[in-house]
Length: 205
Image (cartoon, rainbow, N blue to C red; front, side, top):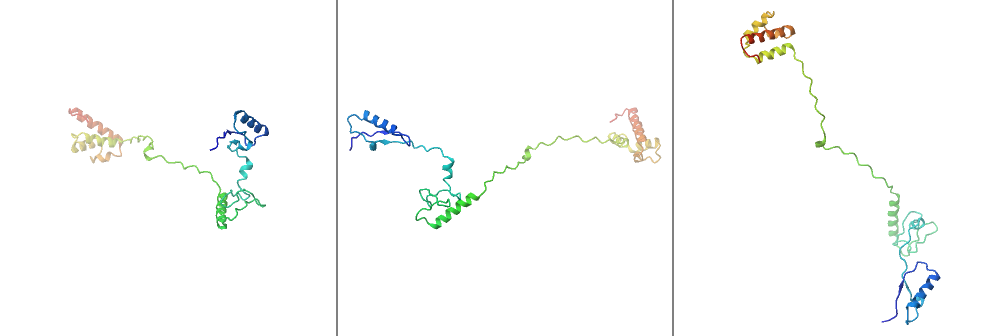
């Protein structure tokens, strides 16, 4: 096993002669009594971080047809033919070439559309707030309707008594229904019946 000293030194990708000389001077100082180190024995750990991609580098990834470089069918040197298309790899299968290039060309011709905005969703039935219900307008009762309800609330006003009072207000037939078209007589009759109940000490309902 060799006992020679191995030193790893980082240098730029393209070191200058002065940088190489500085490395050799460093090795001469620190190598001591070891065998003199030649430039071929210096292990240079170069910066492997790739430089940022430039526009030219990006364009070099595609040929004139917009097909990216594919090592399965294209030359590893990334060389282009006179028409701007990739140079094919020696021995590449023609069927594979046709298949892959057809896929790349189809992908390149497919337009990219922006995602459509989602349709507005309707609120769930449970979340719908019903408008406040408005009170229905009160139906105005006629004097005749009020009279009929009054008679119905007061049982002592028997049919025979009501008929007598109907005749008293001027309706010869004695029929209560004949007052439906005469508001004044219907109001007058209710007043007479109310007085009759009160005069006899009967509560008016």
